[in-house]
Length: 261
Image 1 (cartoon, rainbow, N blue to C red):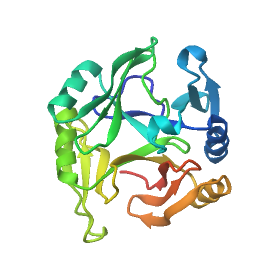
Image 2: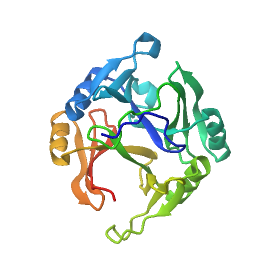
Image 3: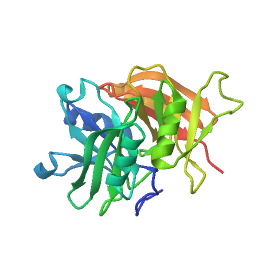
């Protein structure tokens, strides 16, 4: 099991959370799908729910209203930083906008929310006592993330300017000829940190992939729990994938990743 015990390198996705209009319904759905447990962090945390896998916090849930979100719900993706305030300046210098300025979350870390120039929302997490998702790349945890946006080139340039991620256009021979997809590689490891995919949706969105030991069985559990199937399941060079929306319409993916060299 891949456990994270310290802060991730700058620019690596390191946490996810979701705002929903019905916490009890969300806990029922995701608990049934992934075997998650939940711990309410109390009134000082606004009733925020810690999402636990194998007794480790991997994500969060918050109660929100349709007025807060325009009746849209989504998984928020956060990128690691050791200086949230400094990264927010890089964001605005690169053409992004501030949604929520950097602020302390108790002694756990420092959090901020921003939008890229196309309107895709993402967060920053500067870990202190809590470095971020404690388990990744294992069944029930997040293992990949993609930005769906109309124009991939400007988006890649923005995330390169902010996080120093290196764009690499995908030229996989097994991919569709019209695929417009850019990998964002981390400068230290050279390994992909995230992807950017051309898509005609009106509002750009970071979409989270959750690892599954059996995608087909997970899809059936999700459907039984009230999800809708958007695509798949189908086999790709990177694993078996399915696209779904949860009972609130939040977009997410399931993947059984192929072994990496």
